Length: 388
Image (cartoon, rainbow, N blue to C red; front, side, top):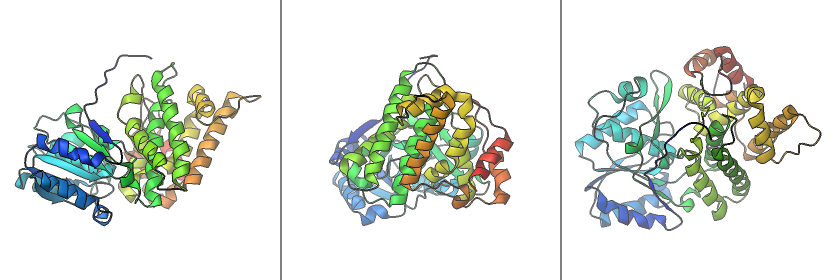
């Protein structure tokens, strides 16, 4: 492994079908006022809301609510949450939902006590957090983003058509996260497969960089094989606990910074996907699937040894009598076949991208500089157009 690095992850995880019980162990560590953060109300339909509220009240907590967190949390929503948290002297932010709720909670945690505009300070000027950070806890109902064990948050500025991610450091990471695979059973198939591809692409973004013999790559390959195997079971049997639990656990380890150690990483697919999402409000995982194949086929020749290894180790491509280019290309073919089996969106036009948007989207998708190739704006345009 090359370079020097640090690794610290302070988030405590509770995993399994009885993991919600451990909320009782965590709540006494925090003050009385809890802000319950959730999305469109699905947790009320499946009973999770009632379970969580009962535990909160049994622990003597005053419960305030911040509902309606959208799949791509907006700056306006963040401002609303700041107002609720300030007016009620919130002691703990408890996000119950998927990655968007967790992302939003972390953005809120560093914004409530910020004496400047958080968009300008954190997302535009990229400044460090200097104010008191509210503690965050997560109860996960969708596997995909890994937000339950990292410091990242993605916020969309609808007025400026920008969707920007930011990592806030160890202090902003969730203090605890509760992962019950059964809580993901009620997800619609489209959301489930979008989350599955988000997991897989998180791994790809870290895997497709560097050429040294790196332990992180061996871990990444194992995670990718687990995701592929379990995903094919889950799409046929959505309540297969073993498959759903492996998907959930893989999601956490795909983006808690472990497999990025010793790696340059390349987040170009995410940068293009987020730029598309800012214009279309499309599902995040689907924005990634729509641009992945054009991007990876474009850069394959620049990182050929890794793409060859990907084909052999993840997809089991047989190398006999084939050139490295053939092996690598067959690996991408196998990946594309798997994506189609899941029913992922493979065309940017299906996301709502129109010709008149492409130039602005490409302009906002700033080129990643640490990948195998630094893309020009024209190449980004070509990637977007390839899926029209």
